[in-house]
Image 1 (cartoon, rainbow, N blue to C red):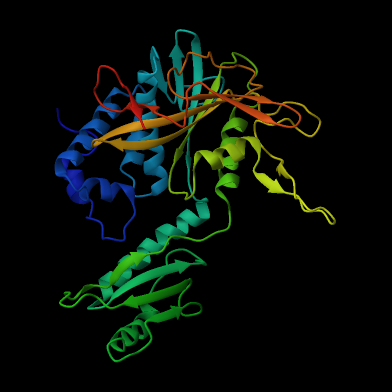
Image 2 (tube, rainbow, N blue to C red; image 1 turned 180 degrees about the horizontal axis):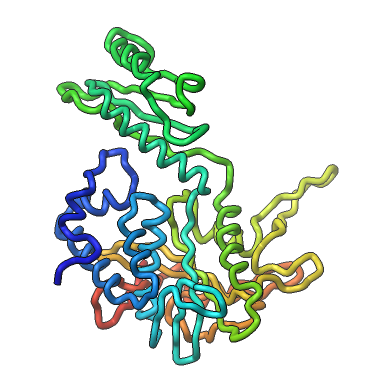
Amino acid sequence: MPRILYPESFIQSVQPPEDWDRRPLPNLLHRARDPVTRDQELERLERWYQDLVSEEKPNVLQRLRSMKFREFWSAYYELVTSEVARRVGATSLRHAPEMFGKRPDFEITFPSGKQIWEVATAYQTSAREADDDLAHDIANQLNRHFQHGWRVVVEAENFRSGRVHLRPALPQIHAWLECLESGGPNWIRLGPPMISCDLHLVAHRPKDGAEIRPIVSGLMGQGGNITATDQLRNVLRKKIKKYSHVRSGLVPLVIFLYEGDLLHVSRESLEWALFGSLQVSFRPGQSEAPLSLAPGGLFMPDPNGHPQNTRLSAVVYGRRQWQNGIPHACLFIYHHPAARNPIPGDEFSPLPQCRETIRETEIQQDWSTDISGDIQILRLDDLPSPLQSLS
């Protein structure tokens, strides 16, 4: 069957990535260590795409062919989620249907009834993501203009407006490179008014015998002070708000949260978003500082003790896990203790599920499986029995 998603003509149109290039699509198409593994992944994505029942299939195709982190990963994890639904017993699946005046990512039908599934992927903020794209563009410009024996790590941030044109700075960069062998400084900083960003280049001497080649060897990621907990809470709130005013035909709402390009995303950061992060309260004259939970946890009552975000039934933390060269889904299900429409206990069995009891002074977590031992994971490939154990 000819490929629709990534035909050979499309693969050849995508330039192979440099070593520093972190964009997922070029790396998927060109940098697989094992060509057989790459072909298996492409065939797997092709199968999932063709099996997807969707009113928005052209949009999914466009995102899966995108060079942008956000667009590619959002579509990729929607395909992963569709496969998860099949493997946990869904009897039918529709992608991006019209429901209650909204268009959710999925309408999933189980023997117990219908559910809405939303897919959320943890990204950098849009502004930082745009800056990351511009930093990739700067690295490509440097490689087009300069070849040298030394290698250069690029850090670019604080972009003022649009694409940065390096032409005004090229003579200064050239002079800096020429002075490296004679003991000149191994770094250079450039910025406004010469160019419309803050650019920091650090050079390092290559190994003996290294060939003359394009200069960029590394690209630093964007900085920022937003925590993973804050970002995850914002991502989840946006999904909840989408359905906060839906009053008719209520069905369980489940949000799948996957790792994207935001660093430090973990189950711990998700739990802090759901229940509040730990904080220490220092008071004069006290020898001990008590621990407490910071306000804002999505599963926690408001200051008056009223349940919040009850439209949300559960959050599923997921990450892709490779085992024996085969992708698996490692999933942890957190049930909202005050959900308006709770999910039946056997719906995701035997994956690890957490049900919480919130008391005045403590939160008790009751896991369906021992998460300190073997964890059940879903094999995302053809297999009669999809569940396996992960130690």
